[in-house]
Amino acid sequence: MADLKERLLPPKPASAVNLRESSYRTSASGRVPFQGVDVSGLKKRGQGLRSWIRVDVSGNSQIIEVDKFTMMRRCDLPARDLRLLDPLFVYPSTILGREKAIVVNLEQIRCIITADEVLLLNSLDSYVLQYVVELQRRLQAAGVSEVWQSEGPELRRRGSRKFDSMLGQSSPDYLPFEFRALEVALEAACTFLDSQAAELEIEAYPLLDELTSKISTLNLERVRRLKSRLVALTRRVQKVRDEIEQLMDDDGDMAEMYLTEKKRRMESSVYGDQSLMGYPSNDGALSISAPVSPVSSPPDSRRLEKCLSIARSRHESVRSSESAPDNIEELEMLLEAYFVVIDSTLNKLTSLKEYIDDTEDFINIQLDNVRNQLIQFELLMTTATFVVAIFGVVAGIFGMNFEIPMFNYPGAFKWVLIITGVTGAIIFCAFLWFFKYRRLMPL
Image (cartoon, rainbow, N blue to C red):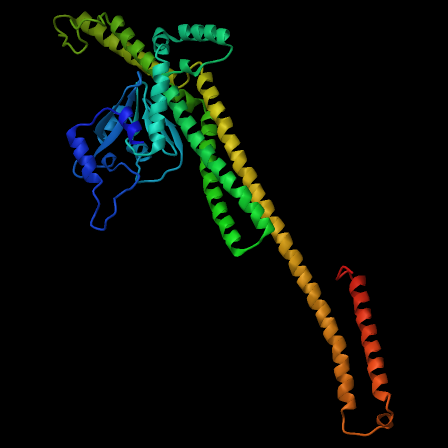
């Protein structure tokens, strides 16, 4: 993992290296603080800086140190959106489309996606490094498509239709930059959750089969822990699925995520305003902020004021039209593909939960059967005890201190035993017939 990080990121300055080394020094108790988290990526005492991994459109990565308020101004985000990316807090999976950025919080992937770059919190997590490596690979492999995006949507659609007809399938390389970054994040999150679900399945089914064959306290405790992990994983998968489904159901939220399209429209509106007011867009000879004397040239000032009002109205119309682009099929198909993947993972977990519930039902049936057998055995023992008690009654009667003529016959004791035994057997058989008649015992 260290070699992967060295290949991924450029060398750091000496100050950053010293800070990283000092952050990993053990404390007085001998423990390393915040294991698994890049301490230099957290807030530095007195400065409020954080270490971010920046990946641009060309696939180049670098480490930058930016404070919270600079990041808010840079990406035009409120503080609560940046709080979703804080590694010290645990928030559910969220995908938010803003004016100039997309805030992504999917499992370990916490990043800000703009039309020109991707900003991730610098972390030692292997999944974050794998995300950066995969994003760089796809951006470098799809560098030719950036030229098509600068030519306009019509040429991009014509080119994509031409290549789709040649290849017989649609290629994700023709997506805008923000969608390619979002796709890698969704793929990383879905792959991570699916791998955890697969590991849980591999561990669960043999354990449940062992529990059905041998019910013990140890197996029951292992199943209880397994079910707790299953519930937690199902909740996380369900949150990712609900987030994707919510985006697919809301066209406005999907429209807000077309950052490249909004940036292109904004630039075209600015260039159109400059041409409308008669200022060249290339040279800096004339400026909009140049003072105009209302005494020397009143027609020019009125014309400038009129042009500025027209520009403001056009700018507002562009902002209103940005919220509803004509075509959101690209993003919708992208979300639909990963919705199918995460839904399949959720189905696996649901099937596993049903299997656990069926195992619990089977165990309860087994325990009920054993309990019923114990009750039947107790009933037989109670009946036998009643029959044996008859001998005690007879013995108590003949043990009284009085004489009867029967004591003078030598075979009287034998006949008393025979008559008492036959009577007890008849009573016992009568009880058994009653139990069978009432279906209290399968005989």
